[in-house]
Length: 200
Image (cartoon, rainbow, N blue to C red; front, side, top):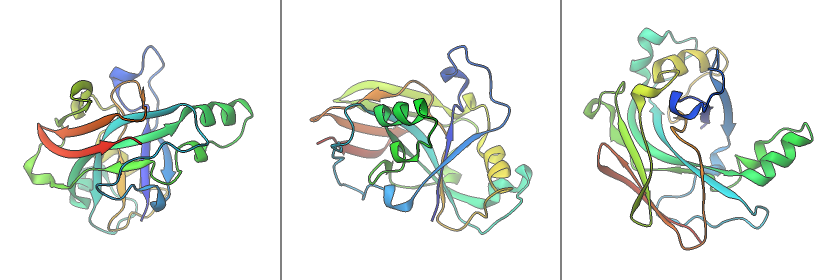
């Protein structure tokens, strides 16, 4: 399976930066998925681990060159997840002109909440949030996406064949936050609990 991620995909997160003309795509390996219920252990190679909450879509059909108007037929479930970034590792790689996959694709760097049927939601307007230690932390709504779910699928499927079980992290609505040992994060989608995550 592939974990397809989109960066800089919310108007609210642009912070004055120019709007991208095409989706910014990067991948995580399947080993990046943190098993459900497991805590997240901050790896020793990073001193600045950051987290972002995102809507995650599950692909349910094999497809290539999928038109946006048919894209809704290719996903069947939605949840929220966490995209972890070793920001210090990323910045060092960027400064050296090197790829920064290690900062995004390390083991456990992708948290996926429990799946919910897509028909229970309006994909164009899904509210979601993440709390930290019981206090509101991050929140967003899919109506603020620069590239909609269907547009993402159209764009990505031009380059990659989408397969059953692939997932798409659609982007973060606000700035990432640093995590620390002892933190407890909880994610919700339309006030439905999707995950609880302990940081160790």
